[in-house]
Amino acid sequence: MHWDVRYKTDDLTKNEVSRVKSLGKLLQAAEDSVLEWAPVNTSKKQLRKNRIRVYNFSRKEGANELFFRYKNKKYVCLNAALLRRRYWAALQYLIHGLAHSFCHIRDGIGEEVFCEHVGFEALKGAIKNKGTKLQRRIVGSVVRTSHPSYRAYFRAARRLSEKDPEKMYRLNMNARHRKISKSSEKRIIYRALKARKAGFEDTEIDVPELEKGFRKI
Image (cartoon, rainbow, N blue to C red):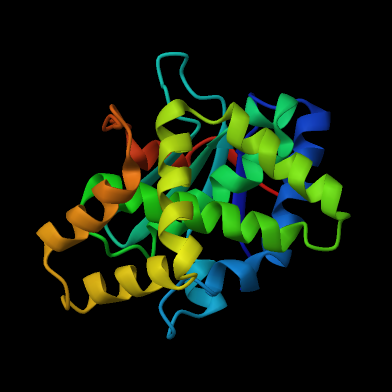
C-alpha cells in the first residue's frame, strides 16, 4: 500500500508538483520516525490510510495544515503555498497532521502540543543524515516561521520532554486507555505551556470536495 498523496491540478506549477513528489518520498523515509510516537500496534499500512491533499488554501484560512475525519476516512491537507518558500516546514506540517490521526489526548490544546512534538521529532529523524549545523538551521527556520501559538506548543512539548523523552508518548497512551483524567491531561499541558495566549480556530470545509479535481502523484 502506497501513500495516497494528491495535489490540486489547477493550483500547482510544474516545479511545485516536483516538490510534492519529493515531499512524498521524504514522508515515506520518515515513516519509522513517525511510528515511534504512534501506539505500538499502529502499522505503516494504517498510517498510509491517511489521504493527503495539497492545494492552495483560502487567504482567510489562518492554518497551513488541516486534519479532517469524514466517515471512515482521514484527510491531511497541506497549503501548497508552503512548497514555494518553506519546503521543510511543509514536511513538518504534514507530519503534524498525520499525528492527529493517532492522537488520543482529549483537550484541544493538548492535542496540538502532542502533534507539534511528533512533527518536529519526525522532522529531525528525516534529516538525521545531514550535518549537525544544517539540521539545527532547518529546525530553527521551521520554528521561527511557525505561528506564535504553535511555537508555544513546541516549547511546551520540549519542556515536558527535557526530563522525560517519553512523556508525550505515555501521556497519549494513558489518554487512549483512559488511565488519566481529562483534567489531569490539561494540568500537565498547561503547566508546561507558560503562554499568555494560545489557541486555534475550528475550520469548516466541504470534505467530500477533497475527492474531486486532485491528481495522484
